[in-house]
Image 1 (cartoon, rainbow, N blue to C red):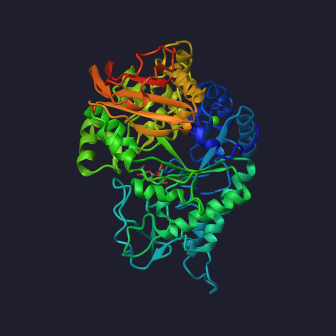
Image 2: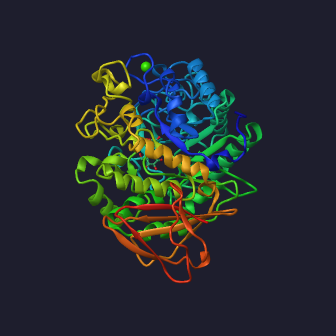
Image 3: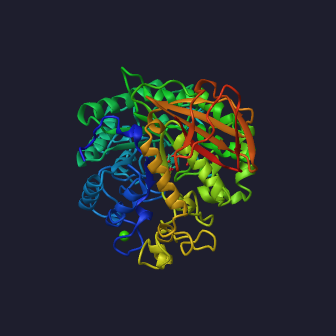
Amino acid sequence: MTQHTPPQWYKSAVFYELSVRTFADGNGDGKGDFPGLTGKLDYLRTLGVDCLWLLPFYPSPLRDDGYDVADYTGIHPDLGTIEDFQFFLAEAHSRGLRVIADLVTNHTSSEHPWFQAARRGPTLPDGSPNEYHDYYVWSDTGTEYPGARIIFTDTETSNWTRDEVCGRYYWHRFFSHQPDLNFDNPKVIEEILDAARFWLNTGLDGFRVDAVPYLVEREGTNCENLPETHEILKKMRRMVDTEYPGRLLLAEANQWPEDVAEYFGTEADPEFHMCFNFPVMPRLYMSLKKEDTTSIREIMGRLPEIPSFGQWATFLRNHDELTLEMVDDDERAFMYAAYSPDTRMRINVGIRRRLAPLLNNERRRIELLNSVLLALPGSPILYYGDEIGMGDDLGLADRNGVRTPMQWNAGISGGFSTAWPSDCFFPPISDPVYGYQRVNVQAQERDPGSLLQWTSRQLEARRQHPAFAHGDLKFVETNNTSVLAFTRTHENEVLLIVCNFAANAQAATLDLGEYVGRTPVTLSGASPFPPVTEGPYTLMMGRHEYYWLRLN
Ligand SMILES: OC[C@H]1O[C@H](O[C@H]2O[C@H](CO)[C@@H](O)[C@H](O)[C@H]2O)[C@H](O)[C@@H](O)[C@@H]1O
Ligand SMILES: [Ca+2]
């Protein structure tokens, strides 16, 4: 593969998010590792994804699943060596797979040597200044920036914590063991850029940059999306474009459309190539329960124009809770009632469940939401295990219930490891509905009707039709709000996507006036539907049915 070309490869890529620690164990110690992952690359290639997103794999005390980084340029010893990483990357590239990784910029672990040095205070015993103190954000009172909300509401009561060694308070937007870096210090910016350079020098294809809205703090603001933060991120992009052209920066900015779009920057002064479309995600689930797709149309209509290099990243689930930050209070209450009947399912501002359990393990619902995900503008990101309908484990703390080992077969520990389940990093799921004995890759590879094979076929269909990746979006008027219809148009191709979000059969009349004379043809099977005429175009749809059609 020619590395890092074409320049906008990410626009047609399907991403696959995984944790090395829970994907495949190569040495039988119960913890996933790079050799194990390397052994599964053919599976990922066959599935049909294009780019892997690796959750943090750096040395870490693992109090936030690796988002508490203790060394930006190392590999966590459980996961292998830098040579194992390089071999994995070369093997991925040789299969045409790209790889991006998390870059955790906002904070470090409190065990990072920078923070340990910072705790010694602004001045060292010999009277010289302690340059590391200024790597973090300190206060003598812990009263500054009262306008900043607390993000981990279930654990933290303040964004300030007093450090007993230093005798001062340090700032943290997430866990108190994750002190925020001080981005007003130019040395910190250089340290982070150097960490990025280290991995880009290995050949890594880019980063998902964690928690970007919170880099800079200013009194009198909510300390999110500040102009100073954007300036730093633009600097990062300039470094990448200058030194590593073709590599990708993807922003994790869990913000409203108007604010998230700012993270693309402009044509002249770009920031991120991609941003997650957080606002649309909960509305897909909400529409399903309400049997009303109005909110999807509204939020997509609210997305501002983005620069020509920009691409949205769409997703149904990830390693965190299903976040409900981007809905209003009534919608949040609706979502909690609809999708978290057991209070153990709730955490912070969201719901800690996987895709299949959220959708009652109903195949038609799972296919429907995936078919919308793959057809909306943006590059879809699949979360490992969702392609086989894995379940979750509410008995595990924090968000770990959605991070259990990948289920490869019905053997010991689901084929994840040769270690006993109790010796695995997290125990593999073994309940009667979602357990590895029943839900696993091997069984689904042998079953042409499986969710795995359906997913693979959908990805192939998506690849065959560039309008999915590059097409303009236009919603089609229907007389039935349960039915979402839209076109994706690219060059000579027009795709028509129609999805019934209702749990009962529906009839919907579509306004296809501008396509009179064209014949809708199914993408799978090439079956022609009645041609579009001057009159209303009525479709009958089964419950949770979807059509991917081409207008010939
Ligand atoms: O590194 C701290 C956290 O950063 C990311 O977090 C985000 O997740 C939150 C929900 O868990 C979300 O509400 C917030 O807007 C995000 O920035 C990362 O994905 C987390 O795993 C991590 O704990
Ligand atoms: Ca291992």
